[in-house]
Picture (cartoon, rainbow, N blue to C red):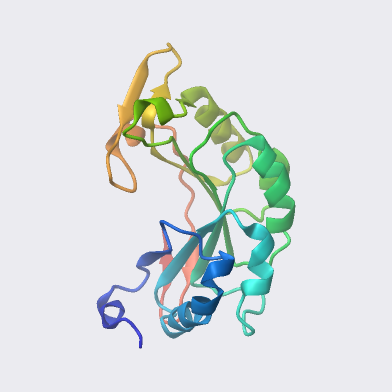
Length: 210
Protein backbone atom coordinates (compact mmCIF):
# COMPACT_ATOMS: atom_id res chain seq x y z
CA UNK A 1 0.00 0.00 0.00
CA UNK A 2 1.08 3.59 -0.64
CA UNK A 3 2.02 5.67 2.42
CA UNK A 4 -1.10 7.78 3.14
CA UNK A 5 1.05 10.57 4.62
CA UNK A 6 2.61 11.22 1.20
CA UNK A 7 -0.71 12.51 -0.14
CA UNK A 8 -0.54 15.38 2.36
CA UNK A 9 2.91 16.60 1.37
CA UNK A 10 3.32 19.79 -0.70
CA UNK A 11 4.31 19.45 -4.35
CA UNK A 12 8.10 19.30 -4.64
CA UNK A 13 8.77 17.85 -1.19
CA UNK A 14 12.10 15.98 -1.25
CA UNK A 15 12.10 12.52 0.33
CA UNK A 16 15.44 10.84 0.98
CA UNK A 17 15.28 7.11 0.27
CA UNK A 18 17.17 4.69 2.55
CA UNK A 19 19.23 7.45 4.18
CA UNK A 20 20.91 5.08 6.66
CA UNK A 21 21.43 2.30 4.13
CA UNK A 22 21.95 2.01 0.36
CA UNK A 23 19.00 1.61 -1.99
CA UNK A 24 21.11 -0.43 -4.41
CA UNK A 25 22.25 -3.05 -1.90
CA UNK A 26 21.79 -6.55 -3.31
CA UNK A 27 19.96 -7.47 -0.11
CA UNK A 28 17.36 -4.82 -0.98
CA UNK A 29 16.50 -6.34 -4.37
CA UNK A 30 13.31 -7.95 -3.06
CA UNK A 31 11.96 -4.58 -1.85
CA UNK A 32 13.06 -2.34 -4.68
CA UNK A 33 10.09 -2.74 -7.03
CA UNK A 34 7.75 -1.74 -4.21
CA UNK A 35 9.76 1.43 -3.72
CA UNK A 36 9.77 2.19 -7.46
CA UNK A 37 5.99 1.78 -7.49
CA UNK A 38 5.72 4.40 -4.74
CA UNK A 39 7.98 6.79 -6.65
CA UNK A 40 5.97 6.18 -9.83
CA UNK A 41 2.69 6.88 -8.06
CA UNK A 42 3.84 10.17 -6.50
CA UNK A 43 5.09 12.14 -9.53
CA UNK A 44 4.73 15.46 -7.66
CA UNK A 45 7.18 14.44 -4.93
CA UNK A 46 10.95 14.28 -5.40
CA UNK A 47 12.82 11.17 -4.27
CA UNK A 48 16.54 11.48 -3.57
CA UNK A 49 18.71 8.35 -3.59
CA UNK A 50 22.30 8.50 -2.32
CA UNK A 51 24.50 5.54 -3.22
CA UNK A 52 28.06 4.30 -3.46
CA UNK A 53 27.00 1.30 -5.57
CA UNK A 54 26.91 3.06 -8.94
CA UNK A 55 27.82 -0.17 -10.73
CA UNK A 56 24.44 -1.64 -9.70
CA UNK A 57 22.22 1.29 -10.66
CA UNK A 58 21.55 0.37 -14.29
CA UNK A 59 20.44 -3.19 -13.53
CA UNK A 60 18.17 -1.97 -10.73
CA UNK A 61 16.23 0.66 -12.67
CA UNK A 62 12.54 -0.02 -13.44
CA UNK A 63 11.60 -1.18 -16.95
CA UNK A 64 9.79 2.06 -17.76
CA UNK A 65 12.67 4.27 -16.64
CA UNK A 66 13.56 5.47 -20.16
CA UNK A 67 16.05 8.33 -19.97
CA UNK A 68 15.17 8.96 -16.32
CA UNK A 69 12.31 10.13 -14.14
CA UNK A 70 11.93 13.84 -13.47
CA UNK A 71 11.10 13.26 -9.79
CA UNK A 72 14.21 11.21 -8.97
CA UNK A 73 17.63 12.50 -7.92
CA UNK A 74 20.45 9.97 -7.78
CA UNK A 75 23.57 11.12 -5.95
CA UNK A 76 26.83 9.18 -6.08
CA UNK A 77 29.11 9.38 -3.05
CA UNK A 78 32.72 10.37 -3.78
CA UNK A 79 34.65 10.92 -0.59
CA UNK A 80 38.18 10.77 -2.05
CA UNK A 81 39.95 10.80 -5.42
CA UNK A 82 40.03 7.02 -5.67
CA UNK A 83 36.23 6.86 -5.49
CA UNK A 84 35.93 9.73 -7.96
CA UNK A 85 37.98 7.78 -10.50
CA UNK A 86 36.15 4.51 -9.86
CA UNK A 87 32.57 5.72 -9.77
CA UNK A 88 32.13 8.78 -11.95
CA UNK A 89 32.97 7.25 -15.36
CA UNK A 90 30.14 4.79 -14.68
CA UNK A 91 27.81 7.34 -13.14
CA UNK A 92 28.06 9.85 -15.98
CA UNK A 93 26.93 7.24 -18.50
CA UNK A 94 23.68 6.38 -16.74
CA UNK A 95 20.28 7.68 -17.97
CA UNK A 96 19.43 10.20 -15.25
CA UNK A 97 17.43 13.43 -15.22
CA UNK A 98 19.01 14.69 -11.99
CA UNK A 99 22.59 13.61 -11.28
CA UNK A 100 24.19 14.85 -8.04
CA UNK A 101 27.42 14.14 -6.18
CA UNK A 102 27.69 13.65 -2.43
CA UNK A 103 31.14 14.27 -0.94
CA UNK A 104 29.91 12.86 2.33
CA UNK A 105 32.17 12.95 4.17
CA UNK A 106 34.92 14.66 2.22
CA UNK A 107 38.16 12.98 3.30
CA UNK A 108 40.78 14.67 1.09
CA UNK A 109 41.17 17.28 -1.62
CA UNK A 110 39.59 16.00 -4.82
CA UNK A 111 39.47 17.12 -8.45
CA UNK A 112 36.03 16.91 -10.07
CA UNK A 113 36.82 19.24 -12.97
CA UNK A 114 36.79 16.62 -15.79
CA UNK A 115 33.34 15.49 -14.66
CA UNK A 116 31.81 18.87 -13.85
CA UNK A 117 32.80 20.13 -17.29
CA UNK A 118 30.50 17.56 -18.95
CA UNK A 119 27.40 19.53 -17.83
CA UNK A 120 25.89 16.26 -16.59
CA UNK A 121 26.21 17.05 -12.87
CA UNK A 122 23.67 19.46 -11.36
CA UNK A 123 24.76 19.69 -7.77
CA UNK A 124 27.62 18.82 -5.42
CA UNK A 125 26.95 18.41 -1.70
CA UNK A 126 29.79 18.48 0.83
CA UNK A 127 30.10 17.77 4.53
CA UNK A 128 32.55 16.72 7.20
CA UNK A 129 32.32 13.56 9.24
CA UNK A 130 30.25 13.49 12.40
CA UNK A 131 31.23 11.29 15.30
CA UNK A 132 30.81 11.17 19.04
CA UNK A 133 33.90 8.99 19.55
CA UNK A 134 36.85 11.35 19.17
CA UNK A 135 39.36 8.72 18.03
CA UNK A 136 37.19 7.78 15.04
CA UNK A 137 36.81 11.24 13.55
CA UNK A 138 38.49 11.90 10.20
CA UNK A 139 39.15 15.62 9.76
CA UNK A 140 37.84 17.96 7.09
CA UNK A 141 40.05 20.81 5.88
CA UNK A 142 38.12 23.88 4.87
CA UNK A 143 40.65 24.44 2.07
CA UNK A 144 39.37 21.24 0.40
CA UNK A 145 35.83 22.61 0.42
CA UNK A 146 36.95 25.99 -0.95
CA UNK A 147 38.83 24.23 -3.73
CA UNK A 148 35.68 22.28 -4.64
CA UNK A 149 33.70 25.50 -4.62
CA UNK A 150 36.07 27.03 -7.14
CA UNK A 151 35.70 24.00 -9.39
CA UNK A 152 31.91 24.27 -9.18
CA UNK A 153 31.87 28.02 -9.80
CA UNK A 154 34.15 27.59 -12.83
CA UNK A 155 31.74 25.04 -14.29
CA UNK A 156 28.53 26.71 -13.05
CA UNK A 157 27.51 23.74 -10.90
CA UNK A 158 25.65 24.27 -7.64
CA UNK A 159 27.55 23.47 -4.43
CA UNK A 160 26.04 23.09 -0.97
CA UNK A 161 28.26 22.91 2.10
CA UNK A 162 25.89 21.11 4.47
CA UNK A 163 27.79 20.79 7.76
CA UNK A 164 31.37 21.01 9.01
CA UNK A 165 31.33 17.80 11.05
CA UNK A 166 33.15 17.06 14.27
CA UNK A 167 36.68 18.14 13.28
CA UNK A 168 36.94 20.89 10.70
CA UNK A 169 40.31 22.60 10.26
CA UNK A 170 40.12 26.24 9.18
CA UNK A 171 42.75 28.12 7.17
CA UNK A 172 44.44 29.38 10.35
CA UNK A 173 44.61 25.80 11.71
CA UNK A 174 41.94 26.45 14.31
CA UNK A 175 39.31 23.74 14.68
CA UNK A 176 35.55 24.05 14.69
CA UNK A 177 32.92 21.34 15.11
CA UNK A 178 29.22 20.95 14.63
CA UNK A 179 27.34 17.81 15.61
CA UNK A 180 23.99 19.36 14.71
CA UNK A 181 21.53 16.68 13.64
CA UNK A 182 20.02 18.97 11.02
CA UNK A 183 20.57 18.19 7.33
CA UNK A 184 22.05 21.66 6.78
CA UNK A 185 23.73 23.54 9.64
CA UNK A 186 24.06 27.23 10.49
CA UNK A 187 27.78 26.76 11.19
CA UNK A 188 28.42 25.66 7.60
CA UNK A 189 26.24 28.50 6.28
CA UNK A 190 28.21 31.04 8.28
CA UNK A 191 31.37 30.19 6.33
CA UNK A 192 29.68 31.41 3.12
CA UNK A 193 31.14 28.69 0.88
CA UNK A 194 28.02 27.35 -0.83
CA UNK A 195 27.41 28.38 -4.45
CA UNK A 196 23.77 28.77 -5.42
CA UNK A 197 22.43 27.88 -8.83
CA UNK A 198 18.71 27.14 -9.31
CA UNK A 199 17.70 23.56 -10.11
CA UNK A 200 14.38 22.94 -11.84
CA UNK A 201 12.14 19.88 -11.51
CA UNK A 202 9.34 19.57 -14.10
CA UNK A 203 6.91 17.57 -12.00
CA UNK A 204 3.52 16.29 -13.11
CA UNK A 205 1.47 19.31 -12.03
CA UNK A 206 4.01 22.02 -11.42
CA UNK A 207 7.56 23.07 -12.16
CA UNK A 208 9.52 23.49 -8.93
CA UNK A 209 12.74 25.50 -8.71
CA UNK A 210 15.13 25.10 -5.78
